[in-house]
Each structure stands twice: as C-alpha cells, then as structure tokens.
Image 1 (cartoon, rainbow, N blue to C red):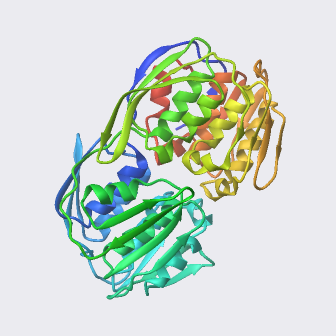
Image 2: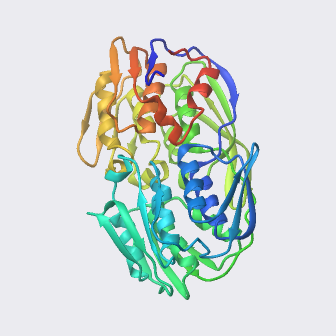
Image 3: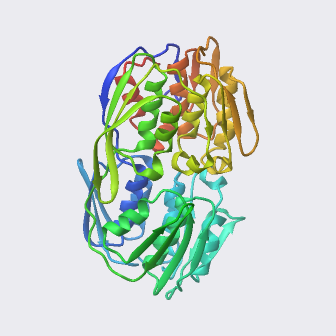
Length: 441
C-alpha cells in the first residue's frame, strides 16, 4: 500500500455542499462521560477516527460495555468510578493527547495502578501539566520525566482542590474537571480562556457546576459525587476538520462551499474571526443551539484578495489546531502578517510552528520565525512551479492535510508522505477532497 500522495495540479473551481464527520473533542468527551453515567448512552455522528476508537478500546479495558453500531454508538455506564479494579491495567492512548490527559482525571479514583502509554509522537509530549494538578487530589504518579508512559495510582477519598490553569489548555482544565466529578466537596478552577466543551456537557447533564466568565479567565466550581443519567448526543460536525475545506475554498478562485451543521462554539471559531479580518467572504447560516453548543452551516466563497493580519494572541486558543492553515492564508495575503505567543503550537503532535515555517519555506514564501512567533510575507499572486516533498513530520495528521491544501491551492509537484496519519482525526479527508474535483495519485 502506498504511503504517499502525489499532487501535480491545482484544484479547479467548484460549488459544493459537504457534511463532515462528528467533532473529535466532543466525541471523546461524550465517551468518557458516558462511561460515568448510570445506564445506556447513545451518540450519533460519532467520529470514527483512531483517536476516538482508542478511547472506546480504553473504556472496554476498564470494564465498560461499548457497542459500535452502523449508525450510532452505545456505552453502558455503571455510574461514577465503577471501572474494573484489577492489577496491571495498561491503556494505549495512541496519538490522542485529549484521551490520555482526560482519562487520567477519571483514573485518580481507581485504587490500583493503571499505566498509560501512547505512540512515539504522544510519548514526546508534556504530561507534567496534568500530573501536577491531579497530584493535589491525593493521587500518585510515576512518569518518564513528565512524559509517557505514566502510571496512575489512585486514591479512595480524593480531596477537592483549587487549580489555576495558566496555559489556555482545555485538556488540562478538563482533566481536573473530570477528576472533580467523583471528589467530595467543591473543586475550584481559575482557567485561562480555552475550549469549553466539557463545561457545556456537564451543564447539559444538570450537574452542580458554576461558571463565571471574566475577560481573560473563567472561574469554574464543581461539586462532586452527583450521579447522572445517560447522555444521548447528536454530535455536530468538527470545525477543525471543516477548516481544510473552508481555507481551500478561500484560496480557490470562483469556488463556493457550504458545510452543514458545524460546531461553531465561540472557543473554536478563531479561524472564522481571522478570515473575516482578512476580508474573506464567509457567512453562518441556520444557526442553532444544541446542548449548549452553537451550530451553523458555514458558507464560503473564494477568490477575494486577502488583507494581512497582525493577529491578536487572544485568538490563539480558539484556533490552535488551524494555525498551519492560517499560515497558508497569510502566504496569499497582500502584505506582512504577524502571529505571536504560539509556543503552545509546539506541544502538539509535531512542533507545528516549526513545520508551518518549513512548509512556507518549501513554497518559497519568506517568513521569519522564532520559538514563539512568525512573520509571513504574503504574495496574492503566489504560484508554485517546483517539486516539494513533505516527510518526517512525526506523522502529524494536520501537517499532512495542510500540505494537501497547499498543493491544491498553489500548484507545484508535491509528494506528501504518511497519508495514514489522517486516520487519527479525519479518515475520510482524501475522499472528501476528491469529491470537490481534486486529482491526486
């Protein structure tokens, strides 16, 4: 089986309507919370990527019944902290930082040792950021210098904590919130702004959670030990997956696209804000609210001359997964764009700020990058007429997919390796791209 994709032609103009698979962040959170509910939970449009399948496998290892059917998924929860209690449990989180970090919050109440492992990429990522706050509950951890593998040794009567999350990491915040669910007393969190899917899901379950929104931080308090009913959920489409088609359309003259029922939670829509500031034509239609989450159809037209942007760091957390694509927009803009305080990008599957700079350099786009920021010198007439090889990027799915978008938007002869990486988050990516008329081998 070939591991690379070759692209030698720009995509022709198109006018299409797409439906994208379920939101990955919500899919994983639904599964973890369903495991703690009392009874049978069902989800529809659950993303069936490797990250989500690994989540279901981990829950099965912990004694939870999971039924993955053709049109939906069922999880039979036993209530709070009813995971199987046996020696020597090892959970493989694969490539998923969300899974590894969030499930640790549930495991601190299990009075046995559970080892969490992951693939080579995940094993290079920082876990001190969740180990330190979870230790405060009373749990014990062993780790490989703050990286995987880690061993969680839980405690019966965890104590509520006060936690200040300073990084803007939804994974860290959510790990502590999940730990608080089965902790007597009130856990208090002061958290820098980040995705709030966990908070909204907990609120939809009528759990005792209070949230006070300040300008730069949220104040969250959770009273633990309240059992909750099963969670039936129709998962909206993933905006991070939709982003590839949004950006391709913006960069493609005379192209139009409508993406149906996308999660447009304000903590995830930084890309849309940036597109508007750069002058792209984009509209939200059929807006709704479902279980606290905002959803909408997204309509985009391509071909507009883009303005450069001096991007406010306050937008960073709301588009952290889309920055590689945003760099492509800046490459096409008329002028110099500047992005700052991006060190969190290098805590992903690969050092994405470095890879963003590499891709631009391969394309012939001038950029100046340090460990925390990047300046991109855009050219509205950018066209590529050379060979480009993209490989050795730690099999980061977003590097692969961004490279495909760059090849289709700007031309050139691209060979992009490790196509299996898309199984992590978006297995049907290439099929969806092909449905727009893209040609590749």
